[in-house]
Image (cartoon, rainbow, N blue to C red; front, side):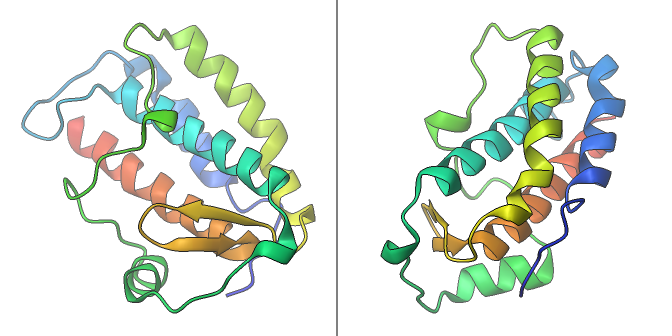
Length: 155
């Protein structure tokens, strides 16, 4: 897997933006969290992974086989309700749609820059281990898709 496309998140960003007006909608049959929470979380994840890649040392990257990572990234699938998001990517309880919009603007600026990173910069995922640039980019696609499906189900 070698993703180098600077537009790799464009369709997800457009879809996220299209749901902001529904940020307050909740459907507890699908998720305890609002649509806004899922949008904010998805954008926070993109931002935090960018920061992790930017601050990583490529010489410290360790590639290890990980079956869960392979299944998730190739199958475009994250099971629902199995894992809890790390605190660093959980929105604050009092976030607003302005916060979502501000983060969206930031992510729109960051997204094309992922492709410029060295291929061995990495993000240390709690379940998948070190994800290099391409795996991190693919993870962001799969993760964004996962939360957008939940948003669609909430609606």
